[in-house]
Length: 325
Length: 275
Image (cartoon, rainbow over all chains, first blue to last red; front, side, top):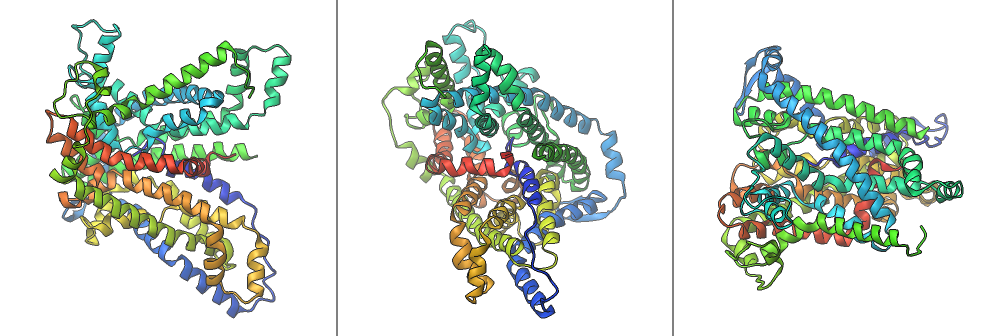
């Protein structure tokens, strides 16, 4: 699961496509019913394979999830209807709340860092025209790697005594030779490792969003500002950053959504530890459903995630719609 | 952008290059590790960028383990997923965008509702559904759930909608049916957008983690993202072979990115950035 995945980005696109003005239709009056029927049949034939797969694997699971969440359900099947018991259990489960809290924490650490770094990287990549293509590729390439790879690299680089990071910090004198940070053994540093890896891995998407926004700011705005004597720094804070406010919101909401779904890097880098301190909501759902074979309870918790994500998705649609006006 | 060389400009360009290289260090470093002999010293970070180099880790990794099987699985799944996506999605998009039938709007909205369904939140029930259909631990189970994606549908529909109406109208006058128009006019005109969607689908499938983690049970069905962590954990002492396995999984994607960069960037902007 990527921080900025295509599906979330696409919600915006959906809105855009939806708002496209409807194509003029010919008056229906002189079209025969048989022609209408023929067109409908053709359309259904064209749509059938997509509709079938989509209904079975995207829409149906939502309804299935409701049923599963109301049942005691294991990998072998349903063991009976239990009503809202799974939901009640979640409200009472301190591990559920801890996982939710951890997820919020991850979001609070990662999103602002991501936004600041993304803006910085985009400004640099946009500015330095000679090296723009190289910079854009370099910042994006981590995003094309799979989570297993980045997690292994991260674990390996962060490992004490043998890893790259401690060696490097020793070499440049930032760390005394006898200090050997354990990046994954303490909750605080584990969070730093997770957030750092995530930002590194997923910065590319946010950078591309910011690059697109930067390129839409007309040059003459800056020219006018320089004539008025505004310094470069002033231009950055009074023109560039405010003019990208929509992108800030978009990146913010997309990152929040992505952070709430964080799973792969947590499972692979810290395994949720130390002592559960980095267990994210999706990881807890996964552990409950597949580790403890309690799919019913896992589905109930999934609905909590679903509702949280829905709120942010709707906010995101709002940002998208407002900007088109 | 002015191209005049100023000290500040040079400094910023330099900073950009340094930062960009820093971002690449983990990748370059993994590559460097995979090109060195097992057990070579690494007391100094920079040793890793010095010779002697070797290529022998690659055949070792591929032959000695399941990596080859996982590689082939990943490849089969990514290729078939991409092919099916490109077969199924443009047809549905064409129907909604170009065939005038009652209910087109209904179907459009129905088919984009999937955007509001986060895969992570229905993962348990998708497993239940797939299990009930006996798709767990099969290629079909790994491929089919990802084919009909709302996002791809939206991108292609929007593209087909903005193709000039005159083209298809002329063809209709000439007596061409929908299939003919779709196959000989719309598909060829949509090549670029299909390439973009295809590349995004391929990379998405290659890197997919959560669903293959649940849907594969035996090592012979693993894809690379699922197999690599199990491979790495069996080589805890030495990291050269796991790093090589990482590179086996990554190099195809990096090469693909370098070749198709502009389509990937376009894909990202198509999926909602424009405005």
